[in-house]
Length: 260
Image 1 (tube, rainbow, N blue to C red):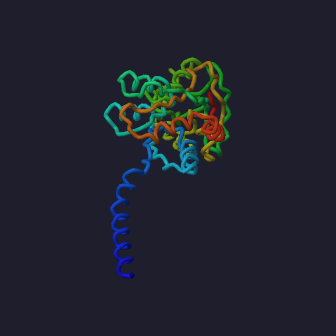
Image 2 (image 1 turned 120 degrees about the vertical axis):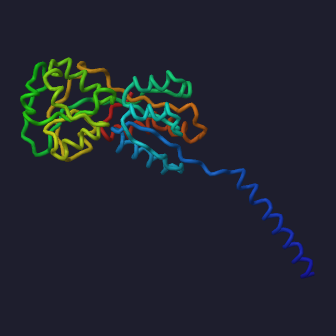
């Protein structure tokens, strides 16, 4: 009898061992999506990724840079799943190349543009038409994101042009590869003034806001998100839908963003 039971147990274990690989294949592990996000989203997007992970999902991998650099990476075939731009034109550029999944693009965040100085600075300047920005800079430079293509720099140039001071300060610029590069220059005291997003200034205790640029002096600051056409990761669109949900938007509002 014992010999018979031993034979049955051995047979059962053999069948179980054969079925385990099948069960494993039937339930593949979820893969973390790769998100290419504008540099100004660092704190907020990381917080959203943490919240998503807390719901039982793999934490998205996030690469931050200027939107222009990210758009070029996508055009070059970077293996990404989601793109979050700090402006509409760079998302338009990617879309025009057929690199976005149709029906997934949506604009969901807003921001504002501010003039900043190092925290210890005593500089005072009222933002208005023909303000003495060049004189206030003195021998120093104005830190901005590259106005040739990085959204924060483009917005800065638009506003300074509208206010009639661009021509007087364009030889005093310290352009950076992203808005965070401009923020760092001011925070370290390497530049007496800089133009960044309000959310950037809020994220760095080393700077203070001197003034806010009028909304009508530059294009609306709008952040769209979209799924990359080549993505095959179902977690990517699930995370996109979370970002644009009421719960996801609430995360970004905690960091000072406006939502749509």
